[in-house]
Image (cartoon, rainbow, N blue to C red):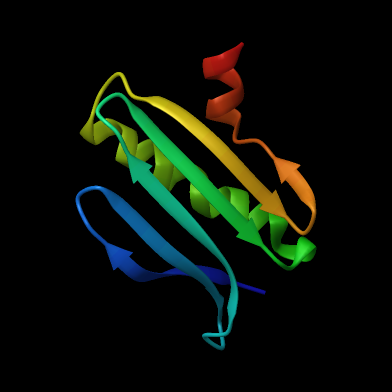
Length: 95
């Protein structure tokens, strides 16, 4: 199953994106909150079978947002089903 972002609300301070499948059915959401020196990412996806696709969708999006404000600390909390996942970039920044 393919998944995509579908914007719900986008402002300079935050973004709320729905995660939809190819039939435009909502399967999750992601919120990005911007602070001067931090980017908070919170997301949840209902369907575990597309968890890798979810990670592959969020990772380059976060990288792109971080380029707009160099030096941002990225704080992520992402869940697929009931399992927390980590982005590779987040693991590198903390380790």
